[in-house]
Amino acid sequence: MENKTQPNGTARLEIAGKSYELPILKGSTGPDVIDIRKLYAEAGVFTYDPGFTSTASCESTITYIDGDKGVLLYRGYPIEQLAEKSNFLEVCYLLLNGELPTASEFAEFEYHITHHTMLHAQFDRFFAGFRSDAHPMAIMVGAVGALSAFYHDSTNIQDLKQREISAHRMIAKMPTIAARAFKYSAGQPFVYPHNSLGYAENFLRMCFSVPAEEYKINPVLARAMDRIFILHADHEQNASTSTVRLSGSSGANPFACIAAGIACLWGPSHGGANEEALNMLREIGAVDRIPEYVQGVKDKKYRLMGFGHRVYKNYDPRAKVMQQTAHEVLDELGKHDEPLLKVALELEKIALNDEYFISHKLYPNVDFYSGITLNAMGFPSEMFTVLFALARTVGWIAQWKEMIEDPSQKIGRPRQVYTGATERQYVSVDQRG
Image (cartoon, rainbow, N blue to C red; front, side, top):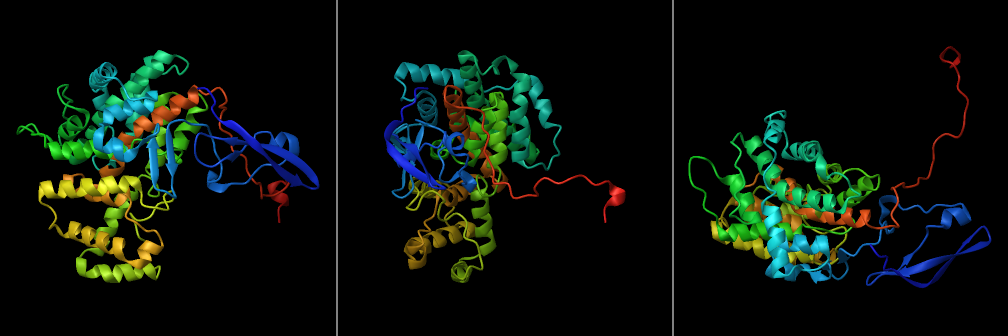
């Protein structure tokens, strides 16, 4: 990867009467950054940034977010355009390769993904090692990590072809693994992928078909699933993506890195947010209890899940697309009158018109609408984060691939501010008071 940051002046830092000049770098868009790589060597000090919220950990050409303006771009393309006009596999190609494919490039890529969806026959025994009530995300962490034991012919990260094969394998096999995690927790037989179906169609069939009857693809639900995958495909240097990059910086194989990303995504503050949003709706329970809950939020008695975003201080651009998708699914399934969804729709209406929500920029986010949609489609809340992981796999792989190919990247090694005991001498146990 060719470094594209450009010098844009210098910043002056004074410490104990001594002045240090730090280069200011400019990307293609977004805020300038101060390059502190030589600060410790020259001044003997570190910077302190809990959560790394003011620190650029890498240079990337994949995803750009402007939280103040509500902008999300994949390789420069607005998320709204991709969700409306593209499909998930084309977005996968874009994220991995930097450009949208030609017709022949897409046909070849689609063929490779479609023909890598099967799992090794012995792999199905792996699922039987879990308890029947295991959380699907627990299964995902273990199963994806185990891929390296089955496909060790594509774990050499220095080999360009092996990196490509491992990328194709993970994108292709993730729906199969996710569907098996779902079927296993439901106590139903596994369904094998079918090469005649598209990516989202295949996944829905593997999740919801049963041997007793023929499964019919609903095009509205298949399109909704595909759109959900597009909206969650990447989101810059979030916690799970940073985990994948940090794991990969040690030279770990790609399957282990993605498993680490899945483990991080499982956290309720990250990938579990849509499950938490649905739990909030269940807690509210009925439309007539919404005013009391809203007042409780204003009085800081209750937490509001599925509203606002750490990055977006404007309307989450993904939420606009997801809102439309949610209503399309509810219309198709005739579920607008279900109690839980009535609560969601009334809460949405209040949030978009109440001055408290507007002034605090607590707009419904993508998690709010995706939770409603997935619930209506028949997925239990335990599966929501699994679907997130399935979609985000391509973003993780693209970020991992970019890191591997960046000559300036080193093994991750954050510093710390040590506040523990200073050096002291050991005293034997019989002499301690």
